[in-house]
Length: 286
Image: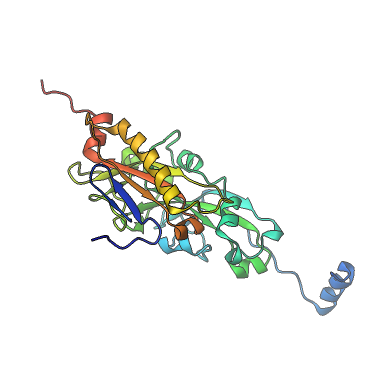
């Protein structure tokens, strides 16, 4: 029986086994009127700063904005700002902007920049560190705020991890491999929890995450993204074959809905045991 498709990442392929469909009036006159009435233009709040921390749930990822204020990075928090930028007035209220427009405004928030900020420069393996783009609320936008920021968040299971230190300090303290992304068991369209890679007998590790389209690209069709993702994952799986002629691998690709909402990655996973044989071979005893 085919399982129901997941909203965002519904399709999964297990090599060698089965496929799952996983006038403005005069400015001078206007200003005079404002002064005469005793009103003042709303003051713009301070622009978010790199290194500030926030505490919000994972649902913020789909909500465009967050009203959460900055907190001390030594108290419980789930996010830390690693990039800030500004929006043009023509951008309009972020809540009404298209996902493509929001992606275009945050192209600087890429994996390389995120990894460098959290003390993992040069890393190519996917991790449990994610980037959340945060825009002003409609109220903040109306008040004249034009900032945009990207936060580094660390996912465990289906939630964001509460940290009590700076992101880079956390990575140094826990070790870089602790950030590796593993599913607790064989992945599927619904099993997308991310955990530490601790059980080679059950865990599958994500070894690649490739963008399939930029901010302005339209969904190329399910068969197209499936074909492209399979090609990517089958090739990458050969790097982590564990000496097997037919290495196991899974491919996960976005749906039309996921694409429209900004989820455009092809994701590839292999069994942790298979991966370990390539990156950490067991030496013979004696």
